[in-house]
View (cartoon, rainbow, N blue to C red):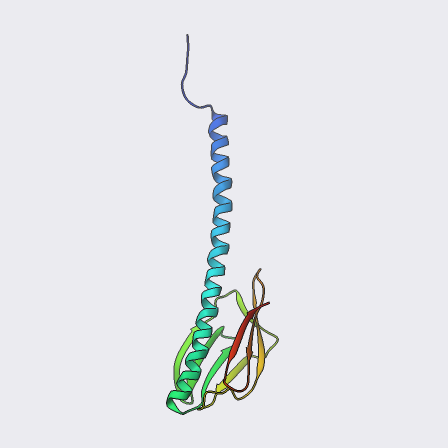
Length: 144
């Protein structure tokens, strides 16, 4: 009686294959979720910085600007001669259908100087729309 205990090479390779496939799909799902969370965080920060721009203009009584730069992939909140905050975009977010610069100006009373709509494209995700309204300086964000 020659009884051997253990697994055959075929059984071991099959288990390794199953573990490898599960790992592959798990990594892809985690990477996609991480990218989505990064973009959602970026848009939440952008919304907060739009409110910061308006608040800063009202508190100081000086027009304050939000500058969206497409070439450097950053946006910045500033007053003439003074940078308040500068933030980079995630690499997968792009401004669409505009020139190299977009300037949104909040006047000292908190209203926006001009209305417009800006579109952000996101890799493998739906686009985002940012609409500035005249009047009370409200900005709406919506997923398209």
